[in-house]
Image (cartoon, rainbow, N blue to C red; front, side, top):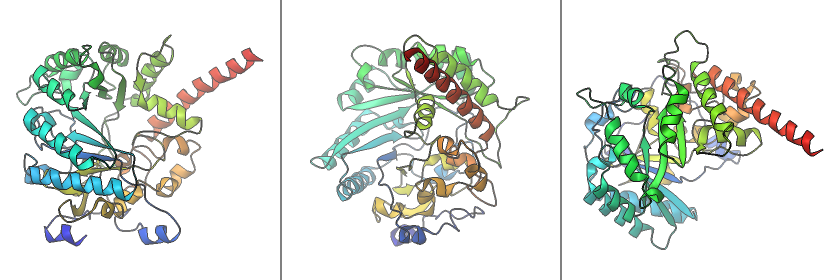
Length: 412
């Protein structure tokens, strides 16, 4: 870790006592625990954004480190990152890794720069393992020229959209107050054409209990996305979510969509959160950070080359993502020893007593890690959405169990 310190990068230290100050990584290793190698690297190719979404964890919440970083990632930085990723894949005999082009807004980097970057990464991975490349974008710059270039380089596209035009434009706006829906709609229609549809990775939608959930879902379905990720807005015990008068407004919203999704005569799209609850209830594994106890195997590289933890932690406190490492001085394996990374890979051992006493903890997994934060004691708490998660899990599992029982009776 000396390389990171030499560059003056901050190491995550705060009033959070767990895991930064009290998780004994050496003791875990002595007991036989071993880290899970990183499979996903989120690359912050552009630090700024052309939208001003009111819930953005990067610009509107606790950590404001973006202000002190380069707006644009330089080639020497992405080349160093490519070498570190290839080194990591080789060291752990990985068969595939994924590179996620992120921001800010990654398309602000421009098609020439992005395609040059992807070419350099693929060159670094030649003969080592498969490299999947995805861009997560607000899509307002995704025109035919940009999409054609990215698609030709094997980049798949995930798009953020919050439902209907009015609902989306309530939150996802330009700095001057104009809504972004019209531009995103044009981009999604382009992605839906036969030529470009193979590049369409799916939609990301933030839950807003103030909106009509079914209108939101139907609006998203019009684009025939292969997958929808519904995300709870980032919040924690020190900065709790707005709830209104309902006890579990976020669960109620999601349950309305679940029933519509589950009762459809054919599967219209994949909804990762719902499928994860079902899989975990049946003894399988989850695929996202929101739920379950599977090790989180993602790391972030910022525009200045800093190696950081998942950037959702920017919603908790300043410096929460920092590791003190950089791609210029440190291998990715060094981040696997950081207490914050380890905490997200040790499953039940990271849960508080309240979670461990809950019968749903193997499914819930304590909820999203960032949502467990409380200033003064850190991340060993239930999710601030605990009641919502429990209601959603109970509803989904009861419906699935009822169907399984009915089918068993029918077959007997």
